[in-house]
Image: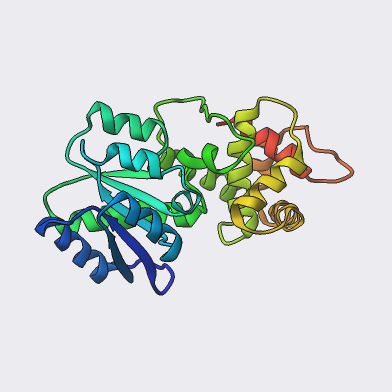
Length: 265
């Protein structure tokens, strides 16, 4: 049994008409994780079920026949709120364009082994749930972001999430804190705006994404930083922040913390 550590049951949607192989993948997903699938065979049905069924996960085989539909439907708000995973047999120009335009959250290369593919889907799904966002689709979901540009273009999104999370954890911002995932989003956003941080805009945008309030985001980030400066690695904190911290406060402000870490990514 796959140790998914997720919510009890997950609403999922398969777009297309699954053949025998995909039916096996879906069966394996149901065995490995608590996933309940609905099916949508047409564009109209996909749109309707995005609103009526509100899937948390959308799986489809990306091919020449459905890339235009996926691109069109990906603009629908309810679709964007789901984690969408496209299964591909090979990467061609149409599919590359879909990925580049952020129409899907992630892709999984079809291996020919249903159990392996199901595990890959769960892994991609877990990664997005764990951090509360998918960096590739962040710019479409948060209104003040235009384009994400990392210092090292070789690093993929999953790697960047892991690097950001590990760094926060080492500084003392533990993964179980709400402020941890809010800071990942804030750092990613700040990386794209290339200007002096505007905390209120950051908080508002993150709050819209998570369905909470700007005040709650600000407090969670502030609490996470305050906790970090009580339990974190002091030497590492000094290495990262140097003499930039106000001695009277003893810790960086939210804006200082976000601005400093955004430089590293």
